[in-house]
Image (cartoon, rainbow, N blue to C red; front, side, top):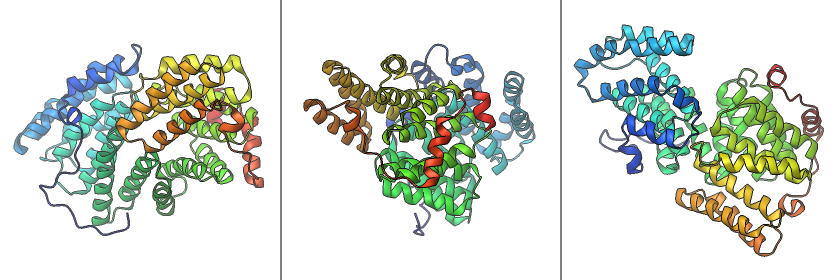
Length: 433
């Protein structure tokens, strides 16, 4: 990440990605996304707007440069419809910029606005459709430009979600090289953050920690990227057994994300997991419950329910655990995040083992193993093998054996635990903290 790699030659591919993703057209991508989501998903409600918008990008990328500006001006009504439907001021700004676009390539400002719109699409489950839009946008900007770097830095995330980890990491590394070339600290930090996420998925926590620490060194303390780096460092410090450091990073991630309910939910879920690991069950259950109040997004619900299930099970609240287990079982496979699906199956295996249902535990472990092996989630594969051995020895699902002994914590970490034990549980109160 610190080397000064030369820019790639124009004919060198950014990365190899799975053929099903490479050949996706917008209509096929939308169908695949909808198949992975629940019938009541927000994407289904807005599909008639998103498909023409991404379709316009795809069509634009196929045109010769001299025809592009004229074509996109005719598509201005798509963004006007989006503005009327969603009433987002930024859609209005984007529509105005598109209407004034006269050059063959989009400006950096316009690229950023389009990336924001595609990020909104991804957040409601349109992962494949967002990737199709990002691929089209990449074809519209000059190779190796800052604009290309910004597109690459975002296109890694849907690839990571869909299990194409090699391709995702290659895009982040290309974004880092472009960021160095143009002395763009934000682009370098954004790319490092994405690379850290891929390393975390693979269980390479030292590399992830290095990437996240770089973001904290180079970005303002209250920036979105710094907050996300704190989030990533919770996972790294937890893996290293530094629970005090993990609690501090988790609280920093939660405390500084006041306007973002989704980010606060993710931070609370990580804190709930930490509390479960160190035996603070009251704080764990309360934090997990609070996280579930903050966001209805299906792509996050699997993760939040998994942590809530583990917290309830460890606390001995069987009624609550059964409720969360039923919700998690129904939710797996509907959010589009394969890593979370695998982790969810592993959590259910531990729960069924605790309930003395080894047949169900074996089925859940098999489902987790299939996903972890297919997509290279090495840390999860290792955890599945450990769980199989524990199931064979009839120790899987026993809280005292599953979690590490409570460590000694400093006064700051202890203060975080006390704050979590007295959290409000309404979304409005949580966002006002």
